Length: 553
Ligand code: G16
Image (cartoon, rainbow, N blue to C red; front, top):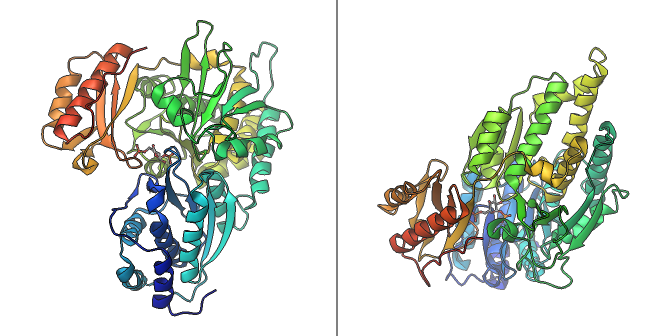
């Protein structure tokens, strides 16, 4: 621990982590993210910031060093709030500010934040940190630690963890164990015990075609390691084979949840030919999951975040009805949600649907408006939130002798299901266990689950432009307000297709503009996406080769 005055300690650290001032950093959709080789000074500065945040809220704050779905050469950091949520928006601004501050101005920047936010620097500060498997993560963790120590913060370095595991640790710590034990073992035993208890409540019928056999694509990342550890706690209740476990391929290289979702095809490195075989892909920090299978005709079927969300919402609704519990449940999606899923949720499940901007931080907050808020992005990132009222009602119904045993059993199942859900943030491992419980309860195969509704054909493309900030959007990102003429052009293109929809938005994790299109056929969705991408390329200063027409399968 250093004994230097604040200014001096910051300067000493800054000299070890010099800011070249050539790049502009911003705290985007999920933290700071860019090429790993320029991040060292940013992580040092973030170390300073999280100490301030910890003192400001008088609680433990978390940092995960990861760039999730991005390629291995990238890296980044996600800051975790005391209850396991994403960093508060006003502090995202401070993070962006400090990340771009030169070595000379750094002491003054920190001092201004201390005064402006009235932070008592005599208070203790406590930081939990963890990292993914990227080779650059280890060194960046050291830069973060140097920042923490410069402001005399304490820290626990958990080493390799999935992002949702670190979110869980932070919440456990700040609830003094109320949410569980802040250890990796605590995480696995909480989930394994809840999984077993939910399944004990469910009776399996003779006609059940459910199988607990799964192939898992670990994206060559942290999820592969952690799911194997989870398996050791499940007493063979699931038979999991892990592929892309990091021993051969590169992180996220032609595998992982993002690849499978965007390319709409199986990952490399995992056998998927067996008809009906249940397959899942995790992303690079294991906070996203998608399911898929190949049918007997060799056709690939993707069950993405929308299918997972509607499965979970439908099941919770059945349990609420069976337990005679009146709680208001809602589903939160983004503009990427397939039109068929929104229609199914609204018309069949009769669950109200809200649309939020991309980024689980936005969905999470919107989901808090409901007693039971199910939120999922189509890319497989999501979870379920239970309000204090919902938790209380479910708990008391599970013990209420005045209710019928069926009603009590439904409430008890809900109670254990809540324990199985990682409410802090989307968690691929927890989400997978929840889905497996629901499929088990229903006795469903992948084909049964997939039959709930049919996705509208869709396509996602990326366009590289000079400065993606020229594209601004409104109406939960469904409408572009700049550059001039872009939205009118998109509207004109969309009107030529049937049952079509398209929008564009700048990514907050990659240096690209994302294009989404859906229409009545795959050929139409591909052509629509291509036309819109070409328009973006021309109106927003595209760089490199113009977009290529996707080849429809
Ligand atoms: C992050 C966010 C997700 C978001 C995704 C893509 O995921 O947590 O909510 O959907 O980025 O964001 P964008 O379209 O702005 O690039 P992850 O898994 O990469 O952390």
